Picture 1 (tube, rainbow, N blue to C red):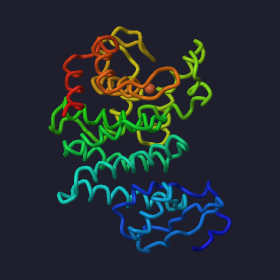
Picture 2 (spheres, rainbow, N blue to C red):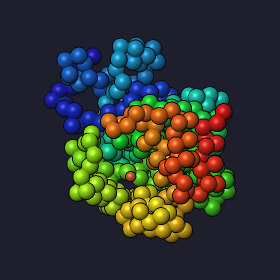
Picture 3 (cartoon, rainbow, N blue to C red):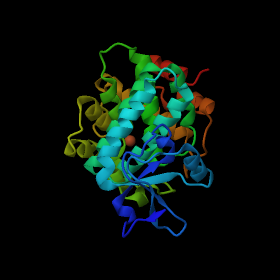
Picture 4 (tube, protein in one colour):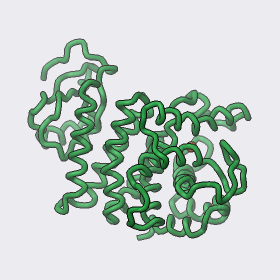
Length: 321
Ligand SMILES: [Fe+2]
């Protein structure tokens, strides 16, 4: 192993080992962090990614490898291309496809939330495309993806899960026609809460009840999310609608505009439904995690009585079987 001279964590972009499972040759230099916290070259560009060696690293607890930030765009395009190959390969098992896109999404979303600079948001958008394709085209893989959502619940995981639920519900609700751009919708669902990265972390993670002022600060995440996407040239009509309207409620008690009923776009309603379910099933400091059944029952009885019942019935279908 070669020591990478003077390379620091800031110069590197972490990639989950799970997302490399189907890449045979290193697209660029890949580094790993050794026990002393130093970054060492693991495989040079074009070198073979030997499966047993990677499995052994994972067995010993290594979850990430690293690429240089300047290689991130290249890595991102390659990852997208490989994921697209994988998603459309009829010989690959649905569970393998689901694990690969989920790992890549989790990675990309964590990076976008930690450091919402253009290249990292674009990386997330690159990974969202094959993920949406998988959900739209493969019912079995969607079921695996929905099951995989039941683990961790940091903000970026929450967003990944809402993205998966949102695309899956849109696919069920709108059918498989071409009248809705599922890729643009996917970007909106996955990045709906991106504005939270501009909200002070002590307010975002406050364990107790929020003051009125703190609540107002958190509410700003909808406009901030729109701003980040617009500043980076990623905004679409779908993403604008979803980021700005996903906290509006039929009774006018939502924000930022207190819109009423029919004025709220169905895309935003889908996102809200996914958002509520994800929040109820998450481990949070202020409430106990609920099972899928408990969350759906609570939503039916109390939380979403203002939501289109046809939409809710389709949502429940995602968790059957
Ligand atoms: Fe939100």
